[in-house]
Image (cartoon, rainbow, N blue to C red):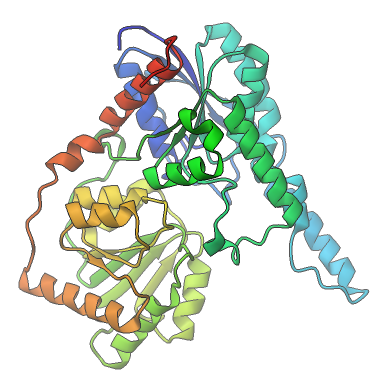
Length: 434
C-alpha cells in the first residue's frame, strides 16, 4: 500500500482474550502495520468471563493497544433481577420461563455495558491520533453501534466487519431463537441502520453475503466478502502433535442446531452396543460452553465413558487437541465456514461433517479428500463413517491432496491486503469502482 492510514480498530475480542474471535482482528492489525497502515486497537479491560477466555498472551509490542471498561455486566445484573422476579412470581402461581430483561434491556447484545466508556475513549483516540478510518469487529454487535456513534460525531469512514449474522431471517432456526416479535423488529431496524450508515460492510463468507444482499439489496454495493483464514504466526500451537493413544473425534465451540445433533450421539451409542468401540481405545473430546449439555446427552445414551466434555478453553489449547486427534467433527450453519475448518485443513485433520450444502462442503471436497460428508442425519451413515475413519487410521489409508491454492487464498496476510485494497477503492478514492 502506497499511503499510510491510521485506522482505529474497535475489537472487544483481542489479547489477552484468548477466544477464537480475536484471531481475525489480531491478523488484520498485524498486516495493516506490515503494509504501511497504523492500527490503533481499542479493547476491553474487564470482559465478562461467562463469554470470554482470558489468556496469557499480550498484544504484539509494536501494536498500539488501549483498553476501556464495561460499566456493568448485563448478563449478571439482569440474570439476578430475573431470578428474583421468577422466585417472587412463583408465590402467585406464575412461572417465568424466559429472561425478558435480556430481550428488552440488552440491545443489541449482552455486551452493552462497554458501549459508553468505549465510545468516549475511542473519540479521544480519534482526536489525539488524527485517525482516518474506524473499524468495528462484530460480534459483539455493540461494537458496530460504537462505530456508528463515532462516525456520526467525527464523520470518519466506518468499516463494519460481521463474523456472524445479526438479524437475518433464518426459517430453519426460527424454532431455536424465539425472540419476542418486537425484539426481532428492533434488531432488524438496528441492522438496517448499520448498513445504511457504514461505508463498508465486510462479511466472512460469500453465502452470508448473498443472504444479506437478498434481505438488503439497496446496500449491495457496500457488501464484500473477506474470508477467515489461517496465520501461522498468530496461531500458536498450529503444528502436528503426536496423536492421542485412543482414536479421538474432536469438537470445540457451539454445537450448532441447524441440523439435529442427536444422531451423532446415537451412532456412538450404537457402535458401543455392538462392541465396535469402547473406552479403552475410543473417545469423543468436546470443549465448549455447552459442555454440561453434552454430558447430559452422553449420560442419556449411556456413552459418558467415551465422551469427554470440558468447558471452553483457549484457542491454542484447541489447536493442540485438534492436532492430536484423528478426526474432527464439523457442524455449522449453512452460511458459515468455521475457523476450525481452516486450521483442520492446515493440520491435515480429516472431518466427519454433518453439514448442510454450502461453502464449507465445497472446501472439504477440494482440500480435505479424507473427510466424510454425511448429508442425511442418519445414525447408520455416521456409524459407517466413524468405522471407516478408524479403519483408515489403522491401515494407513490416506488420499493425497494439494493445498497450494488454499495456502494462497486463505492466508490472513493475503486476506488483509485484499481488505486494504477494498477500503482504498471504495472509501479512499473518488470513483468507488472495484
